[in-house]
Every structure is written in structure tokens, then in C-alpha cells.
Length: 289
Image (cartoon, rainbow, N blue to C red):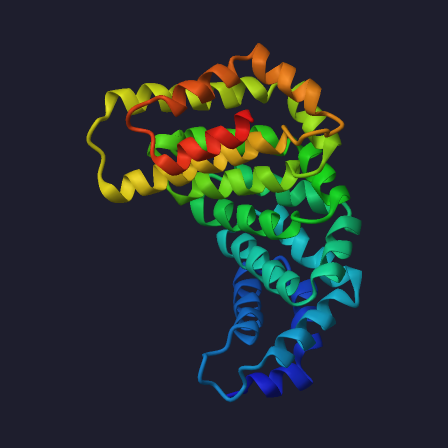
């Protein structure tokens, strides 16, 4: 049986070439992608486990644009494992060689479009993996943030939040959606303007309205559910605060939009709701001062 060192030193290029040659054979693709993922994530106590091995594999992928394109191509298939493992492999490569992977994805034909489209996948595992990858891809690059936003990412994010139970009933995936939303909006005046123009402020208002109504109807909530609810609400308030930077270029327009759609009033109502936790009220105060 081949060890990971053996494969890495003598067969990695053959594995990648096999993905290209046998790309129509879903069984071969599944096994090959699994093998590559195992190389990135060997058993913790394995003698082959090392950061250098992960860097070596990431370098092999990112030194040739076609290798990243190949993984993105698998997102066009409907096969569960081809899509899931490609996303996981892209995440592993991104973690090891962040800047170069960002460049490759940005340059790839329809690269961003394919990644954002994964958010529409009805299979939770694939959708969640795509959400995670986009979150790791977008914290610092304004150009990547813009490209993701203009692929209808805002609408898709709000659709997931709604389908997962919104702020009150939603689990960790709702919080993850809001983290990605924050990535796309933080210090990005262009995306904030697009957010307003795309009709997203009323969606924020609806989330807050639903939260106020649900909190009034559910005096008794399980402790674990209350904790996640608070994290979701806090995450949305943190997103709102990104629009209200003192002296920011778009702050005045953002304030006007929030006032027009009743967001300010809803935030204040939240602050004075009996069931609202102290840390949420503190975040409300940050938004209002």
C-alpha cells in the first residue's frame, strides 16, 4: 500500500492528470479526490503528517492555473462527491497557499460564479461547504468581495437564512451566512451601495421584525437554542454596524436607508424587549451611538 510520502513524491501529478483524463468517470473522480484530501489531512499520529506535505501539494495545484480550473469544473456536475470533495480540496489548498489560490480562483473562467452558485445546492453538505469556502475566500480582498456580491450572493445568503429558520430558529448555518455577509460588506463602499440598491435593507428589516415577533411569542426557549439565537441576532447587528462607520463615505446614505425601512426603530425595539440579552443590548447601543 502506498504511503502518503510515496504518493506525494512520485504520483501527485499523475493523480491530477487522472482527474483530467477520467473526469467523466464519477467513481474514479471520487476515489482520486478522496486520496488527495487524505494527503492534506493524514491521521494526526501518522509519520506522514506534516505542514510541509500540505504546502507541497498546494504548490503543485496553484503553480498551474489549469489544476484549479479542473477542480472548479467539477462544480458543474451534479454528482454529490465530485462537488463536495472539490470544494473541500479547494478549501485545503486555500488554507495552505492563500494568496495564490485567491488569484487562481479570481482568474479562472466563471470561477467565482461557480462557487457562488453552490449556495443554491439543495444538499446541505455541499451548500455549507461552499459557504465555508466563500467565507475563507473573502475576508480581505475587495475585488473578490465585489465579484462574489455581483453574483447575486446577497439574495442567496438571505434565502438560506430564511430557509434555515431566520435568526430565532436558525442554527449555526444562519450565523455562518451572516459572517459571510459581513465579509462582503466590511470597508467595501461599493458592496454597501449595491446592497442598498439591490433591495437588501428591507430584508434586514424583515429579519428584525420576525425576531421581535418570535421573541414575544416564545417566552420559554431551551438554553442551547437561546445561545444560538443570541449569536444570530448579534451577528446581524454587527453587519448593520458595518454600514454606520463614523465619517464613512457611504454612512449618510446608509443611515437614510435604514431609517426609511424602519431598521432603526426595530433595533431600538429590540433593545427594550424584556427577553433581549444584555450583550445584544450592548451591541444595539454601539449601533445607535
